[in-house]
Length: 182
Length: 178
Image (cartoon, rainbow over all chains, first blue to last red):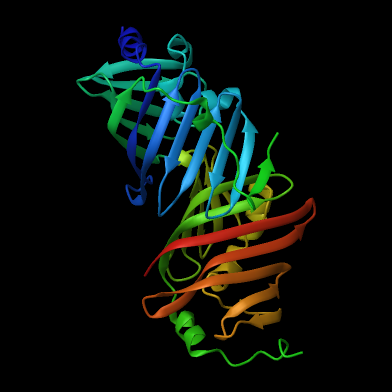
């Protein structure tokens, strides 16, 4: 079924690195913000999602702690990774493939996979993920319960790159306001 | 002291007073006893009191929309029904745990004191508002930049003492669109 097909596509991707272009569209269809950046994800649950100017922001998690660093605000919040985090879209790429069936209802149409979280508190309502012919994710569209759509286009993707674990940890620059949110 | 008698508004301030409609894109940082975090902010301001402030985290997560109209202000988050109130600071205090004084921000964001009591106005060498005390908030304005015909602050720090403890809000403006 669709979950098996999706799992077969994700299974060989222990890690992925690439670039993204993100467009945030509100429920009225108005583009709120466009941004771009680069990311790396590695199973299980390690992610580095770095958005560049003009809205620089860094999301890093080593599957135990999650840092959200904002250089404009000179502020970083540090949170333990909790169950709720497991349902964030980008973590799907780094999630355990066997967990997909437990977390999502999956259907597929013309090569695009639609995922609906089984957990009602998940931060998104539906997610669609498309793959390139090379079997790498090419696009992701996330819709939340407010009708907001986040469109992500991937490029320059590398499957199973060698990644040092240091990129999934974060050391705040001097003078950063560190906020621990236990 | 000199800061007490309100000097006449500078030419730059007079022009900022004409500015009534805008879209601001930037960041909002909050440090408070109940909630800490940073969000991307988009503020669409039509003729006061009509506005829409959209806050969201990375990948658009955790979106919150605060919208104002002549009838009052409403806050929508996730699939919860919208909450209504008369005053944005009170509504955000009840729902987010920290006050967002949008009525006053309509003026502060342009480097202007809001109407009503404003004290301890300090100005920099160019006569631009640098700090101010108003409505229980201590404000600091910096990084004024030319934007079209206006000279506007792009970094505003605001501090107040809520019941549960100090609240610090930082607004960094990346884009001003008129």
